[in-house]
Amino acid sequence: MTTRRTFLKCLAGVGVGTLLSWNVALPKTALSRSFRTIERPWTKNQKAKLSFVVVSDIHIARLNALRNFSALLKDNYNSKPDAMVVVGDLGDGLPRDYHILNNELNRHRLAVDYPIYWTMGNHEFYGGFYKKGLWSPNTFPNGETDALAIERFLTLAERDKIYGDIWLNDYHFIFLGSERSRISNRNYLDSAFLSETQLNWFRNILIKNKKPFKPMFVFLHQPIPYNSLEGLQRGYVLQWQTLNDILSQHPEVILFNGHTHYEIDYKYMVSEANFTIVNSSSLAYPIDRNRNLIKNWAPGFVVEAYDEKVVIKGREFLSQNWINAAEISVPVQA
Figure 1 (tube, rainbow, N blue to C red):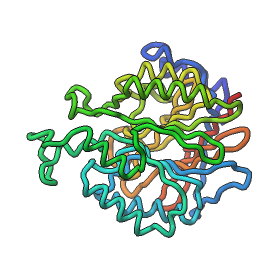
Figure 2 (figure 1 turned 30 degrees about the vertical axis):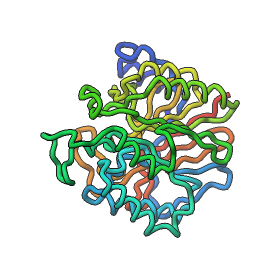
Figure 3 (figure 1 turned 45 degrees about the horizontal axis):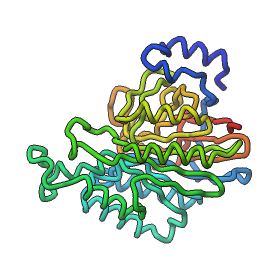
Figure 4 (figure 1 turned 120 degrees about the vertical axis):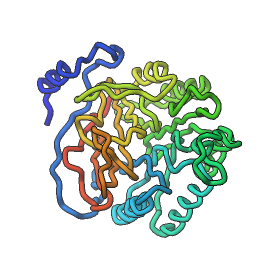
């Protein structure tokens, strides 16, 4: 278990306070290495008030992505989570991607007896790179609009807005997402655009629904910049300063991101902010810190909420193994 003294040494090593002076508070997250190798389904601890699975970047039409997603659903069937959240990049925003995804969900419809919640990723806007189903960046945006991309996503998510919230077992889940893309403005690239309306809604709902000793789970595909134990994670949110200012007032928040595809490792997956940021890798094709593909690996998280803490454990769904050195415990905040 990482002690306060050990963590202070780590802080000195990563140069906190230079680029990210807004994000230098000591973490409330306790980190621990986990060396579990037993191949068996996980089951919800009877003391847990809530259990759910978090994955991101499933890229359903890519090579082996459907295999990985199917393995995830099979593992969930054995384990019976209360819910699952997919943190963006479901495909490339094409009708065929949603068709493939819906077909797979329908194939497992008897096993998927829990709700699935979705957030908008940058690749949900990638239909603009395709012409008649073929990759055609030279003719971008190929008649595609942000509105069309958002409409396809909302049809799957069964929501009327990119952002929204739900309550599950008396825990608050909040979903954020980009409302514009490079289709509207080439300078946006793959960054998230959060409107003032969305940010004000988020600010108000955090204040309104704050409860003592109750975490709030927030999901946004793109990360804001933050320091981890081993270095700087760059950000991909255009309004990241405003978003960070809002989050900094709420240490009870646990924010899940995707987008980077980086492997799940306790040194990199958690921020040093005064709220908790967790990066969820990619179910379809995770990469190591040198950006090399990690083959035959389908990572994500199992999250369990208790009265006094939230435990987040890395899981590899192809082998049904816990991921070594990928378990964190977040104390509940008053």
